[in-house]
Length: 178
Image 1 (cartoon, rainbow, N blue to C red):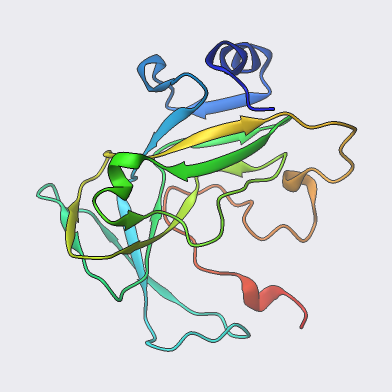
Image 2: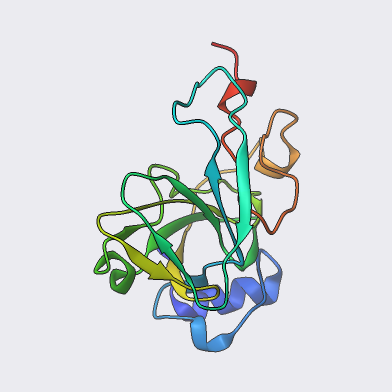
């Protein structure tokens, strides 16, 4: 079941959902709009290796915006820091962003209960498009869960994305055993 606007507000009051900064006008019927953060990143190497730490170059989006190019994977970040302690958050792109040919995530739309951070976006475009800091890019949807949780994400010793940041975070796949 997806939380409605009133349920999201009630969970914020309870402290099970935290959104910083929070703006009431960003609350939709059953979602909360999030915005593109100040930073983007690209990988340094043309060929990525799943067993290697692939380093990124982080840069600030200029005031005049930045033109994303097809064929390049950009890592972005939400301006909002979120905490979700009792629900499963999903991040989806806004339809207006999709209609510009922008995909904001490749596969990582679902968060875990206990996720506490900004959201790294895996951005790709179908044609050149200029983006701006603080433009609406996505919406968070919250799902209820049944049963007790044993392993909250922010308490897992092997969680790779717990360090609070306002910058995009590169893949940590290389930390897995395979």
